[in-house]
Image 1 (tube, rainbow, N blue to C red):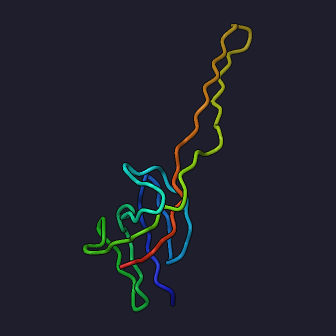
Image 2 (image 1 turned 180 degrees about the vertical axis):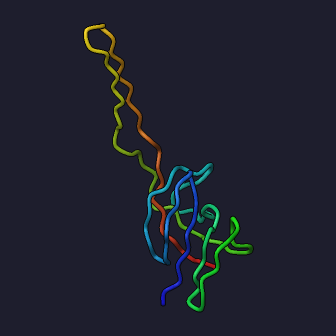
Length: 105
């Protein structure tokens, strides 16, 4: 069985394996081509058994290589109250990183 880990970064959880490419929220100081340690490891399966943290697995580390920095599509929040002349439109684009999982230990 292939080793996998459940990591938490940016308030979201991801199940990752080696060589997976995932989009995560922007990390401080991460540049394209750089190796970064990704988030907190909540669970780890190294092929022999599953280790579940409380809340994190001690000594576990997931390293990833930054492939690309990009921005997500725009999300529009629109509010309106009928017959009152009230409307508000707010747009948001999240900064994201595309990372390739290099190692799980």
